[in-house]
Length: 272
Length: 268
Image (cartoon, rainbow over all chains, first blue to last red; front, side, top):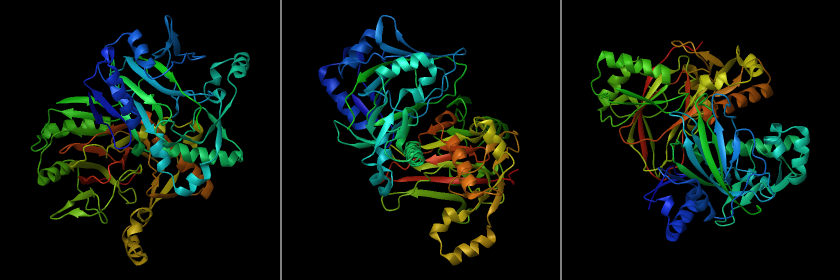
């Protein structure tokens, strides 16, 4: 197995490994590389849906997305596989930089995404190291935010996909949650920004104005190419990222081309 | 010659071309593809410095940068170097020398010493960024002018007297917030953080807010591409419609690139 870093801050491409026949030892190496580089890219992995799911299970329990809708559907026989599709009739909805399902009490640890149908050009995914973004902050900002908490709420991001009745129903099950603005990675101890412009509604205990200001500063830190890399997909490219220390955004530049990707999501623990 | 688009809105990699001795037909073709894709990437061009300069001259007169260090014996080549002693990367989104009355048309940058990992350059299509602005923002910025001033960036290395002297030669320049490309007619965002001090004729607060919105439009991955360098990679970009940013993620490694800059005309 070979590991080649992609940028100075984030990402590595792994070659000479076959995800269909991965040994325990290789899983250990992948896990280590994943923690080191936060996002791993594996090309030309011609594996089945079952093998995709089985590979995900090696890292933890898998999530069944509670209310995927629109271009997002669970695949019939494989509820753990979330299919994200767009085409000429359903334009890809540009989504701001985010980490997955931060509106859950225990948000996702990581996601493993496979390219199924990929446009010849466009639809790249950009990833940012939320740890490098945190490091880049001036020390007075760090000390201002270090002990703050933010409220995450699915209604501010994906809420508009639902009718009011549906939303109220979902809200009972998934009320707004409170997570630290700067979370500590449970395995590496790294501190990283854990607010995003998509699911985060506000910062607790400060004025609305102050909350907007802080969230904008943190988002801006994430938007620097210095903490990012940009991934070009191909069919059967697999990307696994750590939702605890990274954020991602997809380039909405490929309409009307078709793009289909499939994700398994590993359940995480409560951020601290 | 093969052309391979990097993303849907910006960038193309060109293969099957040798820049050491281009024919007039080849230059015409490159010019056309350049206007279309805004950023061209050409790999493995082991040309001499004279050939680099000569290639630039096919597109226009070359600039001699008043502040940035040039290469010994080659005043047209700006030397951009970072190593373990002097850390430098243009890690802010900008277009080159917008503080000049007639800022650069384009730049042609060549990789000389490139770290194994890091120091990528990202490019943004400022016309697509403009297209994606909400209508009410477009209305606000369409007829505005912004003031560009070199002291915001290069002034830090100068004494007050030096700044004063240079200001006589390079007074703050006034350019439209949204400029029109003189060859393609495309409209694009022409403000940036390192050189723009403010938007004229509005309050400081509104100026800051508008500049922030325009900056955010450039920061959208949907309008960007990202180039990984190698030795003898040459990238040529159109400063009239593209902005760029160098990742500052490779310290203490050495990164040395050389730029030839084509003089442009007054933005309108």
